[in-house]
Image (cartoon, rainbow over all chains, first blue to last red; front, side, top):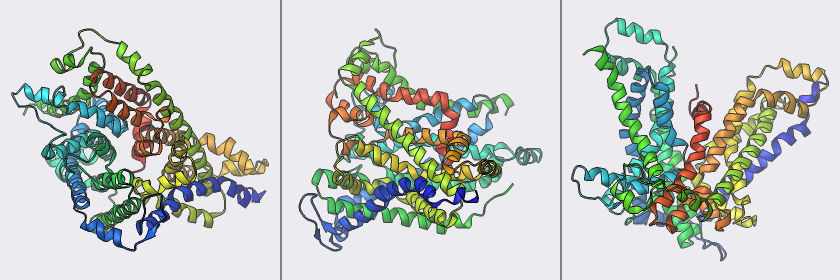
Length: 293
Length: 276
């Protein structure tokens, strides 16, 4: 009777399918990525082992370097512009009583939709002739702008769409943390005569710092993962101005059949992601203690 | 500052934000019912002069939105169901069965999976499905979708199952119940709230997936909505109304699901990131 939950055969029955799937679709591809990355391979002919050549070439490759910059721009935009806005909007929603649920439901809405569909939708908003944005600017007498066709505007357009899709998701995350703070702390500060802005800045923001860290981490990870929106809206163009690491990797592998090089790029992306996560953990997250109230 | 003014300031900013969120949806909805591009261009904010519902019929039938729609629906649902069941079985074994050492190992292994960014495995997975001879079939999506959802699902379900009181299964053991029946009759029913959350999160992820769907499937009849819609846009580039109709078809079911289950969806999608 005691052995019911110790039966190794039943245990295997429950665990083996998952572990097998896991090996097949996570562990095995990770290993093959590493193997492909050290070869010159077009996907058809036998693989030629070429050592570190792909990695050396990657850092000499001006297009890849500029794609790293573009990821960095997305990352900086998310952390320096989006995150402060997200905190401000979360504080605003937490301060209202009426319509709080409505605001929360509405701002979250875009983050459940397909990025590629949002890419198509915003493609129409950016359309130079019939698009909503130029029509709107026309009301103020501003000449039509070729949002996705001009290098100086294309990246901005992608950033705007990305922010439109994801800000609400993070707002809801932070809002949950703010609403979890016991009311009496805030009331005590109010009795002491602190203004709303003072209370937000000196009380609420320090108390939700752990969740702000989570949001910054997710933004960094998200900035490295951007790819669908680029493939759907610009394909990396015009003139490579919106190419990100992942889209460049996909284009190199699929369009040019350079699978060895593409795999090397995927390893580089993986390593960059690991380094950024580790750096962030070491420099910032570790210094924060958990806040108990 | 008078209190009334103070109270309206947050609402003012939030209403601007809400308008920015909603206007693109309304623009697409109105455009989908307009007769032609000229009307969209001249009156982008206005209601359609005549409501052209034929656009919907045309997109559904001619542009094969119906095909993409059902491909997406059954793939997203079946992969989510199978993934949830596999994750639940594994989570049960790890959380409730008494082989703790091996369970710890498997748990660590699954944690590593959370660290691997999906895009990184794209090329290797392409050759994996090619070598399995399932490229350009729905298996090429079903298997990676099911597998891809496992780490998050297992971690969430293990955490949930740990909190079920042990007395229940002790009583069941005394009654002579085996582990498999215990899983079906006791643990699974008690886990339903978490199972629903995991199912929704996986379903939405599969329904919206683009990268694999675009490159692992080339036959038009097998395409899912995100890729089918991109192909549709490229083919009907000049017919704005028709493409907007397609967007409505892809967005509407998800928004309906969201309106019914928004609490569960919000909690499910944020659960993975808030650790306490």
